[in-house]
Every structure is written in C-alpha cells, then in structure tokens.
Image (cartoon, rainbow, N blue to C red; front, top):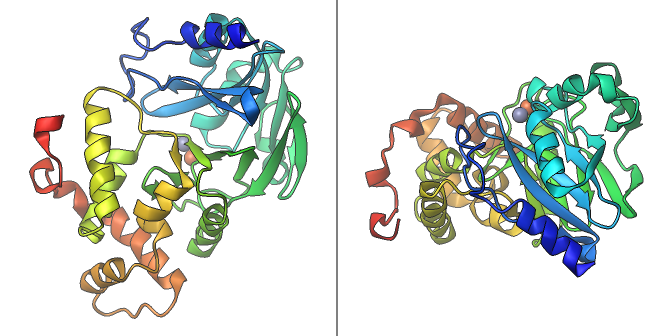
Length: 312
Ligand code: ZN
Ligand code: FE
C-alpha cells in the first residue's frame, strides 16, 4: 500500500517533462493525501492557468478528474500514474471546465460524469445530476455537494473529507467573476466556505493568486498576514510553483472577499466610492467586487508591494 502511494508520487514529480512550460505553473505541487491516505489529490496544470484536480484511489488504481479545459493533461497524468480515469466531477458549465467531457465524448459511456442537476442539459455525458446537500460515494469516501452560485447559476462545489473543490467560486485571495451573480449569491457561497474548518484545503480551478493579492493589498495594506502571503506567493511564483491549494484559514485571514467586516477594507471602499454607504455585508461585498473589476490595482508595480526581492 505505502509502496504504491510512493510510486504514484514519484510518477508525477515535477520537472520530469516540459509539458507544463506554457502554463503559469511549471512545477506542480506534490500530491496531497486526504481521507487518511485513501485518496491522493494530484494537481494537473492545463491550458494557461487552469488546474485539473485528479482524485486518485491508489488501491483501486482509479482517478476522478474535477473539471478540465480538455482531456489531454488529465489522461497523460493518469497514464503516468498507472490509473484509469473513471469519473468526472464538474463544478460548472464554462468551457474551461467541461471541455474534458467534450474531449472524452466517445468514451463517456464508460466514464461516470457527475454535475449540477440544474444545468444537466449542458453537461456532456452527465450520468449523475446532483443538488445541494446530496452525498455520494467516490472510491469508498463520502462526497458532499454544495450549491455555490454567484459565478454561474448551478455552480456546485464538492467537499471530500477536508478537501474543497470549489471551481471558480473561491480563488486564492479572490473569488470568481459574478457572471450570473447576483452578489448576494456569491456572498452566501463564500459564507458557507467560511464556516468550514480552517484546515480545509481549497482546491480551486485557477492559479490567480498573485493578481488577486495585488488587489487585496490595495485595500488592506496593513494586514500582516496578507504581507506574509504576498512574500510567500512571490517566492513560489518566481519558481513557477503553484500557490494552490490554500486553506480556508488562510483565505479568512487574507482574502478581501471573505473579510467584509475589515474596517480597513471598508475605509478603502469609502475612499473609492465616497457617495455610498456601507451598512451591510452585502453592500461591502458588492463594492469589493466592483472595485476589483475596475482593475486599477494592476497599475501598482512590484516595487510598491511588500516584497523583499532579496529572498526571491
Ligand atoms: Zn474557469
Ligand atoms: Fe468559470
């Protein structure tokens, strides 16, 4: 058993191939065991900044992919690991998440596709429609389904042990665009995540953390944990390493979208939108999203950030 896990780990050691060279992450994270080692989570970079998360059962030699812009990288990783891709878990219906279903359309009869019941018709090969509060077994471990809308209607997240697969809802130091919105739905989704244990891993679908942190710092420059996260993130990114997964604890401490009660953030919003009042969480949250969407923070250059270049 132990031997088979270490074989899997060796198989996906970063730096063995150059296939991730076009990706923001050239050196993926080592696999993370969850559910007392029953499952191992593998990070598979795809396209520009997407992550396909492979949930691998070493005993069964099977894998489930959470989303994917296409099937290529996931299949290559499964081949390296000597496991079969038998399941797909979709979080939402954007092309960079269900592309894997389309790519595998000829094999979808043998692949168990799980996705949101409310968007069933748009999920190629869907076998198991799921809704908020549903539970099901994956390789002997229970998966809980959370409806986490705001980015897109019908967006679901999957919680397995202390691993949260949240698609484009929560990102490292940010949250997804409110394509369907409205802000209240996203705020509700993030509040549900905030109530998960602090040590819950956040396996989101994109490497966006550095950009998000630049904005976070623009609204809360005196947050010490945020400064530390920026330092650490700049070190990781300078080496092509991933900042994901993060944890709920880290997001609560540094992610402005989960910090609507921060006085410093509220003051920054008052400065940006002097005509507005911020009497509720929802008004604060909506204004944080609006301010970020203006993208003014992108003018902040690295020299202004609390980054100690010497250690990079
Ligand atoms: Zn996406
Ligand atoms: Fe999306």
